[in-house]
Length: 375
Image 1 (cartoon, one colour):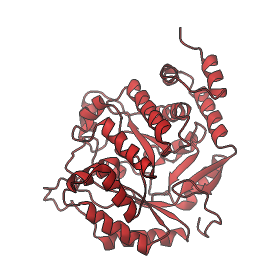
Image 2: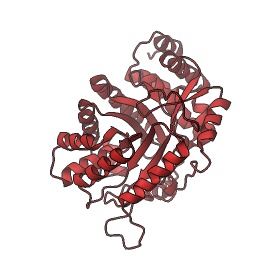
Image 3: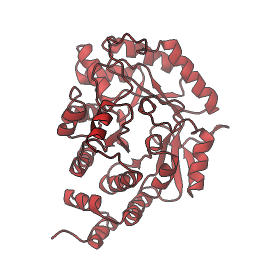
């Protein structure tokens, strides 16, 4: 006979690690506010008080050229594209975007979330030159760049080992790695939604090697496509297991599949599929906070869920509101537009109106003090 809710609650309050079966019971628990209250208890244990952090950043998609053809993506253009929509930004265009971010910010460290596609023309030397010049020109800009998928492809194109590729990128200025590309760490799901992407084990190995080099990273999960609750549970447990080994993950960020304009969305809609709801999101973040006892931060995904659900998630275990996202192209390509109104002031207002104090941080979660004038 499974544990009762009271037994699960007692286990969490005692700080005991939850088992896979405990995770299944959490996902099935019918009382969402009760689940959220328990997740908030863990959040308060990890981060006492009423502070919610955020980082000032910009998402720069340096290229949309990609051959992988993930069925959930509306952003990519094939290398053979003749529509004129395929692009690779020249360095000067990237520098201009960084300067726009610095002008908005008012000073202090900023985060550059630099991501693109698997472009067969870009080898490691291209990234080294770009990263080195960014570091030289903009010493307060932290490069939180490249997904595990991109890093693996750069290594393959450049005929280098994974550790050598990571070491060269790090020496050129790579500061940390976003968790993008994880999607769902289930090979069955990956084979269905992104058959040409790396396997679960390969994604984990990129993160393992990065952590060994001292590169910290976040971890993500895109749920709500063809995955089951069991897939989501196994994803969380795989992140927890690697974190036990390396301690390199700074934060976990789950979000739901955004179907508009994607081949996968069209196929699923034709089969009667329903998009994941805000209820599903709040359940997922709460369970994530309860199971990931060794990942320090849980980040809101207001970019996909919207501002109101983002606020509510602060009561479901979330302690970080993420980036100001001065620019976002991938999610918006799928028809989701929540970044347009999210100014720095609006982010701070949303945190405050939810009953918390906003505190600016660096990518690696150090407090920014004293705050710049526009922080």
